[in-house]
Image 1 (cartoon, rainbow, N blue to C red):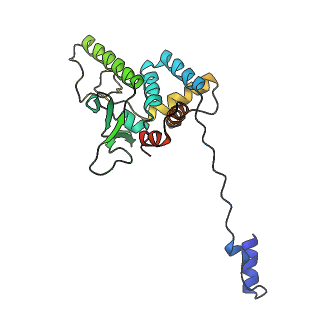
Image 2: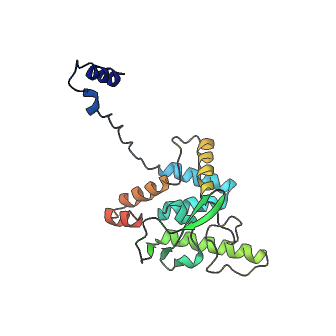
Image 3: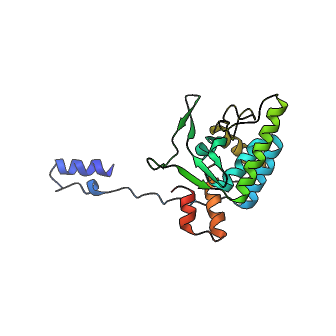
Amino acid sequence: FLSSSFRQGVRWRQMAYNPAADARAPRPPRKRIEAPSRENVRAIIEHLEQSDPDLATVVLLACLTGLRRGALHGLKWGDVEDDRLILRRSLVRVDREMHERPPKMRAQGEEEVLPLGPAARKVLDRMRATQDARRVDAGLRPVGKGGWVLSRDGLGEEPRRPDGMAGKMWRACVELGIEPNISPHDLRHFNATTKIAAGVPMSVVSSGLHH
């Protein structure tokens, strides 16, 4: 309203210029990002173990690695090499179809490598053993390098959808009365703050998150 009034004043030559033309709306204050607490993350994992044990393991692995959900769901067993992960792809859902994309922040001509701590390695070994046991029960050979680490069928044949993770985590938060809702991306903040609290240098934490 003021700007239009000032413009009219300029047109009537009662004002030399429109002072509102130089005005800029104030920027909203940047929201402070707070990592979820250990208690809430543990509660979500324990809650999911009752309804979707595989997803509970996915959440635990996200906490231990700090990976984005697309890169996490894009892992194949051939990407697990001893004490490191080779990030070769990221899964995204477009128009109800799954698509593979290069991982975010990938340097041209270089592989993105994520060191694995003992806890994350232990979780992956347990996931591999569970998947192989299911395949034996189904009359299939043990999973190969091309099998998906996180699979919708539990056999490594079909990848798990990354977008389903957020919805089930939100539902778990509602059922547990956890506010605010914890998203898959919040687990990256959880990973970072946990490492910093343990004395890991900031440069190492940042590199692990591929910032």
